[in-house]
Image (cartoon, rainbow, N blue to C red; front, side, top):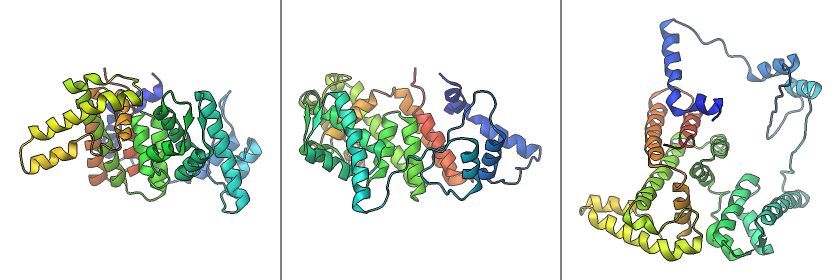
Length: 329
């Protein structure tokens, strides 16, 4: 456990409301806004104590601004940029980076990949190394003991994530990967996704995990084993899931309740069961208490987004840290 975990845990975030109330009662005003860039520039010029180091990353940099000049003068600038244009040479450079990244991951997993499969994966993912790694690791799990990944594997499993960036966020949350989820949250907000739209996607993912957790804890879920290969899941667990879904619908009343039950079914598309396999694996990372607490986090985030003037980014970041935080006991 780190200071960071303790400071940002959902239980300790009430200090924010307490601080706001204190400031109101004592008529304390927020200082006039000062350029963040200027504050950082002055800190860089002043230097940092002892062995402390500051690392700054940015997708793009304007070399004409004084902040860049201050960093360049007082520290080091490492250019890790990748050609972003559409000329053939720039496309080849990006493809080479992707191929090198995939080769490294495949070697570590003892796998090989057909040329057509790797080309399809890059085309489906787009130039995003984090998502590329994520999708390739999904394929490695999907193929189990099989040593070769085919184009059909890619087409069967990998969604077109460069057109569905919300998937990357919800997948990171399912992995309890807070840093990845915050990365994709930033990407979505910068691409003008509405905060309520993002909240809805997170809520939908938590709802799915809760339903899957209900299955795992039921008599039908006895067939599930943590760490099971996909082939075992398909042969042993899918029939139990179908029975669970049938029983769920039958147990509900007719009319509107039955319609709601249909929406809660786990295997909505029996022809594509791999996403459900990934949900079951994800549910093993969460205790039931984690998911119940997540619903409370979602309720509070929804309230704040709709009734307060707080920065939506802060509200959603707090939600992600709460959901991806410590496991329940």
